[in-house]
Image 1 (cartoon, one colour):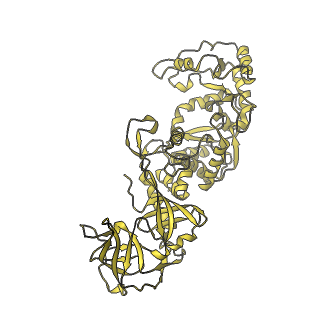
Image 2 (cartoon, helix red, strand yellow):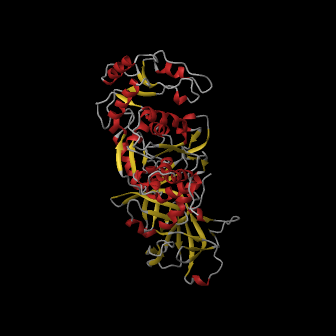
Image 3 (cartoon, rainbow, N blue to C red):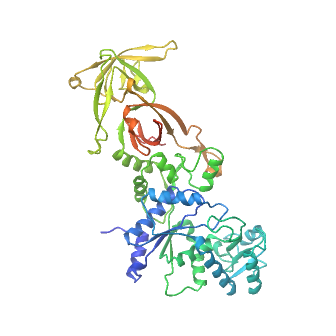
Amino acid sequence: MTHFNFIEKIIEKDIKDGFPLEKIKFRFPPEPNGYLHIGHVKAICLNFELGRKYKAPVYLRFDDTNPTVENEKYVKSIKKDLLFLGFRWNKESYASDYFQNLYEWAIKLIKKGFAYIDTQSKYDIKFQRKDSFESGINSINRKRSINENLDLFEKMKNGFFREGTCVLRAKIDMSSPNINMRDPIMYRILYKTHHKTGSKWCIYPTYDWTHGQCDYIEQISHSLCSLEFENKRPLYNWFLEKINLNTSKIRPKQIEFSRLNISNTVTSKRKIQYLIKKNIIYSWDDPRILTICGLKKRGYPSIALKDFIHKIGITKRNSMIDISLLEYWGRKHLNKISTRVMVVLNPVKIIIDNYCSNKIEWIKLKNNPEDKHSGIRNVPFSKNIYIEESDFLEEKKDNFFRLFIGNKVRLKGSYVIEAKYVVKNEKGKIKEIHCNYFSKTESIKKIRSTLHWVSIPHIFPIKINIYKTLFLKKKNNKLLDEYEINPNSKKTIIGYAEPFLKKVKKGDYLQFQRIGYFCVEEVHNGKIILNKTLSIKNKWE
């Protein structure tokens, strides 16, 4: 039995009721005023995958109605993010492509008595709209004559008025319990250069006026948006009704679904801009935030983001998703594609006393046991090696099964060693650990721990960015969703890697054995920088 989400059920019913399959069309309409985040992935997957399912076109339409905050660099970043996710659009369009249509339709509404020019201040307009518990107050300008409204609207268009001195409002119902129907603003004056139309216009349509009309022009059959637009659906339909639609064309249907809310993070563009301004993060692609480019830079493969969205599903009920679910899908896919390597982050020196000083062995290790086609690499082994400092204790403690004096451990892919004694510096810190190795390791039973290591004569130093959660416990700061900033959310260290890492390329996925998953951010002049994506196990709290 085929399982449909509630949106697919609506579409299936429309088709059953006679809606032509060939006229189904979707769109993804981002505003180019910032970078896309994990919440947008839900809308992207929904629209583009429905397009694939119904063999229907999907438009990428930029909602560029506010030149104050919109920029061509955001247009480029949005297209780049869509391609990273594996989606291609059938047509690229802009709300600004239809500015002339919208202007002419606005004139029609004025002529029909459905719109008027209001010269009150924005504070008066806001005050008069009241709230849903009391009726609004009609503007003193609501009874202007049609001719006066037409004259004033033309003057607005021609730059006769200053910014903020007048707006065009729809004339609907100031007593409506739905605040959105209380004479919403359709046009405002902005003397700003637009990224596509330049200085051609000084009046710009609002989202409320633009959205449904653009859907109609492009003949979008099902206009999918997040749940906060549910109360705007009556306004969406009112505008479509009043512009006198051509009955031979498709009337778009708005359908709302729940937005994606993830714990312990912020996705608001305004809040991310605040974090950048305060130098808390360095840019929109900072790996500590959940922008798509930030997640890509941190090392999340696109399939992990899409499977995360698929697991959540499409519903009409808002809920908070634990970030550990996103991390789960990250690990699941990274485990399949990451090359296994050995890297020591906090080294302590091991000297194998009974191993020949000038001897070098090359040990064969699988690049990825999950992928039989991943190949085998050669790893050098010598008398002097590094292990992690945390893998050794001078004296055994309860539940510690790694290396301590008198204990045996196995070195990954190599020999069993036993710790004999340590040498310390003048400050009492361990300088080196002396061990013996056993050449016939297969005869040694009950070895409880296997450690990763690197050969000191062959180490390759690498720069590693370690990321932790950006937000800690809650505090009284509304701008940051009441989360406290973690001052130690990023640190950069030098790791010591096996020489295989000299061959890696930008974007390669690696698993540092026993440590975590990492992504190559940059390779330059023989030096590499990596970002930690996730630990091996889920340590998020």
